Image (spheres, helix red, strand yellow):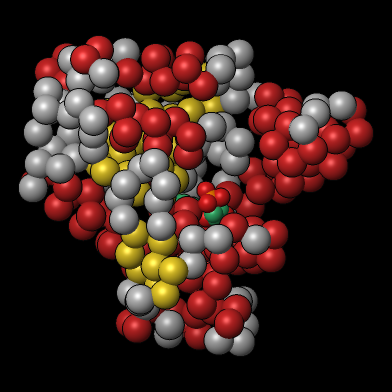
Length: 239
Ligand code: DC
């Protein structure tokens, strides 16, 4: 990995709705720039797993928050194949099940949980900035709440149709009308649920908007790399 020329402690914040391509882009950026990767959605998913296993009522916000003092979430920040842990236990595949995807919005609307998550995520970004390792973090509130001081803040958006097509191709291998109908609710419902807790569909001042509807992965990556502050843009050209 050629990473010597990236700016010391570079931090990048990426937000976007489900299907905007932010996970793929965040991982590729981290890999290309030789910096760490933080998947904040995985943290909400991990707590969801713990709460379900503990038999806690996800609607009982105080009870869910009661799990936080003993919750130790970690991840290796290697973007190529990130692994997630609760304590010593690896949960990488356990947090990607449909059951977790369905339950996680209840955890994400819990403001006690959000305050805890934001603090943890903020600390990791600040550490990566201070120790020089650098980090790209992706989620819904990274550009606005978690780390507005990031060197680059990007909001990735795509039309609902483009996002439905991506999700349909991912799940069914095609984007026929039938496949689109199956994923419509997922995309539309998640937008509605996510927008209850964070405003991420219109960029605030200083946040760069990238519309990925008509772009492939490489196109999005190039668009984001072009936005990097000048001092750090040399890294990718030396790969
Ligand atoms: O990106 P994802 O699908 O892994 O996110 C899982 C859930 O967590 C989803 O409901 C959005 C929510 N989330 C959030 O509210 N804030 C974040 N920073 C990241 C994810």
